[in-house]
Image (cartoon, rainbow, N blue to C red):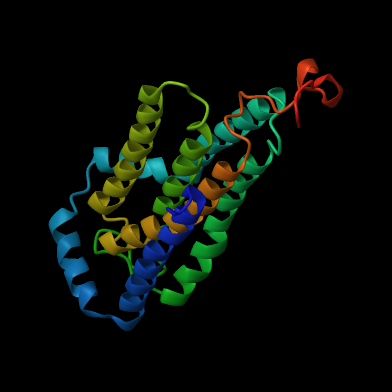
Length: 228
């Protein structure tokens, strides 16, 4: 029997978690990936106005309000539609966002990775908080909104827009020299783990939110004429 979507999502979380652990080990141990990472950064870094603007897509002031609007809209649609446990998906999205600083801050302190030559001398650049913020904020907003539109084309546009925002922020952070490439890749992995929880919650909830779970009068227990 094929695995159900929630079980498949739970199984897939192991790959990004393993990759994140591998990258973290390389950073802490100054492994061979670090030399490759530094050479790649040297080839990619070229600070300009565009990279600065793209990097700003990972700012808390930009990404979190997008998620907040999605949380409020989905909660309103769910409650107005009478969806069972309408509050669970928005809560999962908010919790995933709250876990970003709770996880990233101690990891930065523990790994103590210095920044690229393009930024003033400092440490605490691994993993990238801006990338993790972009991945979780835009990703969670997309996962929450995906069940709402009936049109597959609209759903594809939502996914594409999410990818553009996340990849744009990631590119800007590396191009501007704010982060090493591995800082960004590690945050993709961390974000994927957090978003799996959101996806599982959405898949187990009574979606789509436009469908009411309230019984119509004809569905009342006393009105049935056939076998139960």
